[in-house]
Amino acid sequence: MSLLFDQNLSHRLVGLLADLYPGSEHVRNVGLNESSDTAVWDYAKREGFLIVSKDADFHQRSLLMGHPPKVVWVKLGNCSTSDVEKIIRDHVDDIGLFEADASAAFLILS
Image (tube, rainbow, N blue to C red; front, side, top):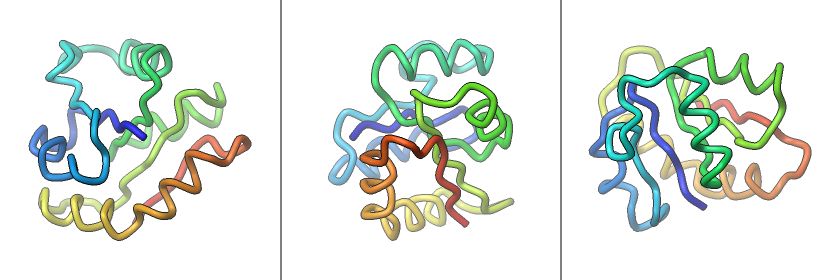
């Protein structure tokens, strides 16, 4: 399973989580850092990524448009990159089950 980290999350998460999520990317690494949510959505859908964001906009988009792509909403407020890494590590099984669930469009981690 590959994650696409949104611009509101650190690009360092790609390396920090590579042991669990190989093939993951950050929007800045694929030329989408200043792109619209629609462009990020379309890229994730086309390339088979789960979008990981702290932005409620992707959660709302998943309610309106369904999936793919699926959305992991990190709902932590102001936090450090290590806090985000920890919550994603702590929920690796939940994220795997979420990806496999054909009916689920979003997962909230808080």
